[in-house]
Length: 356
Image 1: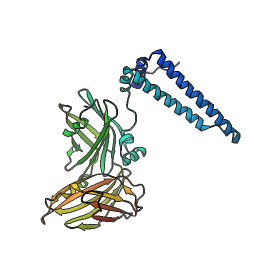
Image 2: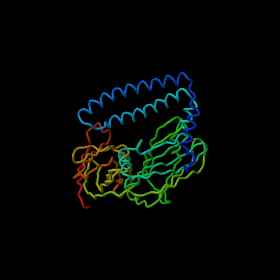
Image 3: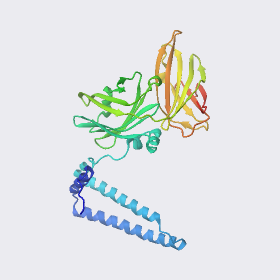
């Protein structure tokens, strides 16, 4: 006896697509004839190709099977695109289909993509409803340098979808985090749904997260409220190397403290001393190279300052770059007090010693 299963959301969506696909007879016939002609031509070419191959070695042609699979996919896409142009109802139903795949894979930086491939990030479905909209965290990754979150904002306001973050606040283990910096990106993936990545950079002295991140939104698209998401965190293990290199330029001094290497991030942590009131760090730029001369792409940085008795401000600064696969013998940090198009003011060689 056959088992019966309830239709999933995806099955129902496909049925809706089928019911809304109302082309006139001539359009369907033209599309069918065009597809059949392409298939016949491909079959003819493939048979001739396989005949030559079989004379050389009597093996089944795998590329032939692959081509037919690709053709089937192309035909499906062609039918879908044609249907959406011919039927507004079809296009409307298509937007209701579930979003498949990871935001980290599609929109994350190199480090997040590598973390996803290596199974080091977690897939989530933490959702809050805000009026006619919903906000969902789809992915999370936490190493010693940053907390990264993939998100989908359904029925987002078209004029300014990122405005939802204007009133956002974060707590880690139910405690406020001071001097937290963030980098939030996103884009519309269709007419109504907005998706992207949130990167939270935590000062090194507060980076002792154990279990939980809470996100609270106070306003969205003119609506005020108190919408909260609770995200479980699991830290990715990495390696930390303590370093002591120091370099100065005029009245500014860099003192390296540690280098942290994880599968998702390369982080350089240092103290930056400057005359009180200058706040030059906000306009600085950095480049990082490994011992082979390969540049690691910059991803973000955070800095918090405190004054000392000598009229100087000490900024505890961390800069994040894309991950490096193998532990190098050293790294070279270039500092720019302006544009990276100019020559760097300093090149700081940072030895990486195993076992520290």
